[in-house]
Image (cartoon, rainbow over the protein chains, first blue to last red):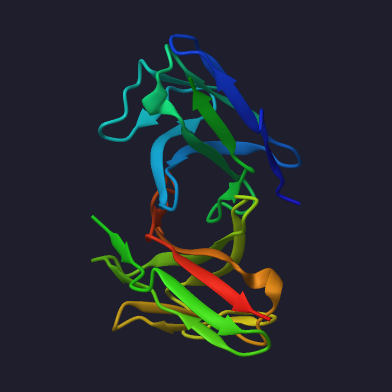
Length: 116
Length: 116
């Protein structure tokens, strides 16, 4: 149980375009989802927390207009990187927390974004 | 703010031997959760073990056990009978007990290499 998927697993895009990453909880309802960014050989940096049906809470230094987060249902959250630039290239990971095990986050497999 | 420190960027262990990964944290809270996550080359974050601060007994999951020293704010991970598949990045993480957002604070990670 507690499986989280992400799509796509890898994406390459041109500078200036927008990219949407999906995060789904497959076998549980995720009341809260989290988006992280991970640079090579570094730890995870929390970008934002999203609760179903409400606006995401962004961490300090994260541009909300650049990283649009939508948590429209209890099983789906999306991260859209708008007007992507090469410095946005990174590994993006989502995680989800459900009703049953509220103290544990379950992570998706991540999405590698490369902006040319 | 809470901080999590992993002082060993890299560790190495011989297959079948035992290794201990260190983690210290700083908090003014009395109730919280601690976690160890494993990130293999696939980049998928996998929950290894978790500990509730109010429990005195150290958590154990098969070959993985922790040494939780609350007064010292130390939370080390012991891996017994190391296997090649244990090679990965290991992240220690902290969460407040009453944190409605369930936000995790991660340490910088320890890369574990297992020698055959």
